[in-house]
Length: 310
Image 1: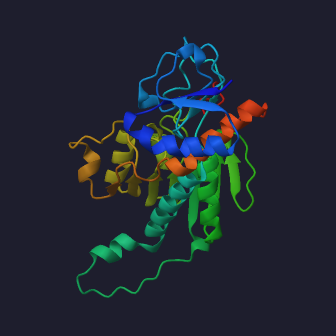
Image 2: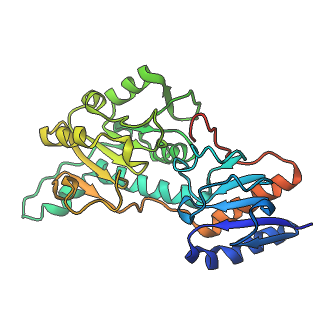
């Protein structure tokens, strides 16, 4: 009997994923039926994007797992109609893309690239930046993306501190956790990178109080989730000069409205949610591997803890 797999995502993704999933499932030796429309009570697995239209999982009575095509699962983790296991997307293509973006922007701040690009006024200022070993970087969030970024920065010699809600142990990284750990991590951070998930517990992680803990002139990089930052508090800290600059890739409302103060602020860089994205080639491999595992009775990869929301 074939395994029935529903592809539930935007229609334009179907011709991209269909051959990739077909190839991967065939190589796994599975007998399968992959389609964009199936009787709900016949679906075994759903390769799923929250913007694909499927919201009510009640009729999907034999569903073995929902396999998200997105890294973020905040829009589905709280869906009470979904009782089957939920796996988030963790793939090396997405991780590599995020690591490259984060390292690039940390180096931009570290080396003072903006100043040299804009100061073409004939003034010779030979002030070299410190070495990376003298630059303190804090990565908030030590999941797959945060750990990869932290390790890449440490490999370049940066003094890296990582913070997470629960205790972590990563070689070469000073790992802190809990409220006291957050205060300590921020109090010494010259560059802060946010890679936390979007949950009620992480909303406004950077707010007026926590921003005040940062050294004067600290820089912020947010490729994680928009709600991690209290926007009004960040703007206030930028206006006083306590925060030197912020590079923001994610926002509470996207696209970022044209009249939002971030666009015009001289000390804010806006990028249009491009830090990283799911790469179909590598994402399809993750989906196929989880289906193979499900059919072999093996544990699924990257399962979401519905209580934590990630």
